[in-house]
Amino acid sequence: MSARDYQVTLAAGAVRLSRAYASGAVDVEPSAADNLPFRQLVFSAEGAVAFVGAASDVSSTNYGTRVEVGAAGSAPVIVGPFETGPVKLSDFWAAGAGAILHVLGIPY
Image 1 (cartoon, rainbow, N blue to C red):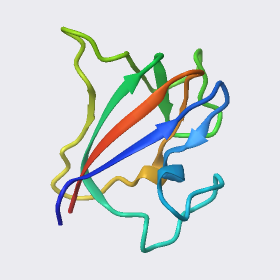
Image 2: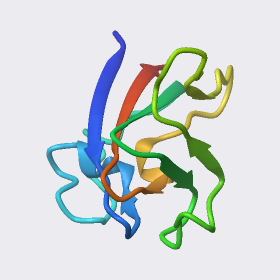
Image 3: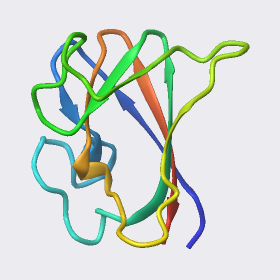
C-alpha cells in the first residue's frame, strides 16, 4: 500500500486525528475500512504550533509532543517506524488554535 497524506485543521480544543477520514467527521471511532494501520506517521504543523497526545484532554499545557511550525532547521515529529504493532490516526488527538497538522502515513 502506498503512502497516505492528510491534513487536519485544529482548534484550541482537542480533535481526534481520524477526523481526516471521510467517516471521521465527528470524534468517534472511524470505520474499519478507513482506520488504516500505519508503520510510521510523520507530523508537521502549519500556521501555529500543534500539540499531539493520546487522549481527548490534549491542550497547549497537556500533551505528548509539540509539533513546531515547519521552518528551516525545524524537523517534523516522527512516530515509528514499527516492525510489529501498528498505530492508527484514531490513536491520536491534537490541539492548536490556528494550526493545520499535516500527516504523512506509511501503511503496513
